[in-house]
Image (cartoon, rainbow, N blue to C red; front, side, top):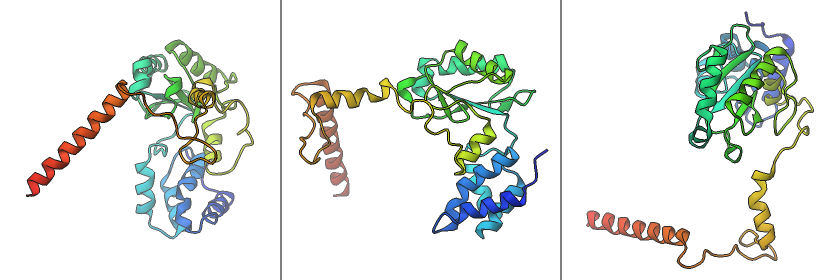
Length: 253
């Protein structure tokens, strides 16, 4: 059963709304806040957000049902999201997701009987350089395998500490939701925020003296060499675009 919103939560909802020149801009963090208290977006929470912002419950509900990070069913202590977009899927994301479904005996967006783990396949987490990627309460677990993913969820269910590969030790989902509402837990600087795969391009640019076009004292990146595949593709795209333009003009005539 969901915990009722307390006066403290109502005060924090008003605090969030007051952060913005237009109060309704605070709706997204407000929804994270009520999830941190009630474990999902309840009817009570929708009415509370609408009341604080002076908008309709339908408007709040429209936002809460549009974004997948807002849940209408209770979430477990740990939300485990497996990326199954193209690159992660090719690198093993689909296998990880299937193994976890079998291991946890749940389907997509379902929670284990002990209330510990909610499993969901998620869209791209912008971490393709570490594929396949899994997230626990929105913290990265990089370069996963079916075996390592099972180990992660088993450790979480057993209460053993789990540290993200690029971030802090994993907290509960409700604690993470409070952070997303804008109430820091002072763990932001724990663990590395970037790793070698993410910095390869930067390293190459520095080695070759490349800077952004127009940067003070710098030169534009070196152009693609003549006859290279990249140049050929670019020329083909340009030719195709010119042909389409001519066809469109002929049609209009």
